[in-house]
Image 1: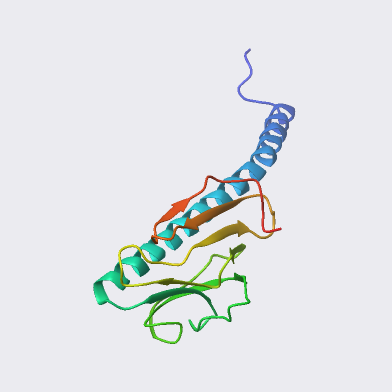
Image 2: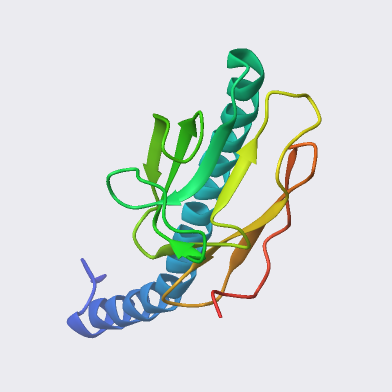
Length: 162
């Protein structure tokens, strides 16, 4: 007579192997999620900077990108870290065009707290913006803003927010 199923020992062995494999995969999934979150934040920041540049040209007014508080007011020039950023037309105290916040666990570091786009095709402030993951301090991406106002993203690096 042939057996009609699996023994309890066989089922427990399969369950243990499945648990070990799931435990090994969890850190990889967290790292992938953090990297995806970082890439999304970089894309949103890049779009905001391109919007600032094009709005300055279209409205013939200066547009300021700045590190901001949760209401969208620009932070003082000596602040170099933040969770929020804003676009303001006409200067740091001008009309609020856009306000965004970063996902939890991300932080934005800037060499300048404010970047001004002037209504000329080749006029802007230079700066380097670094988006990084705070908790793991494992990954970061930089956006480099040239004098012409164009933005380029650096590859993902192993440097964190240090």
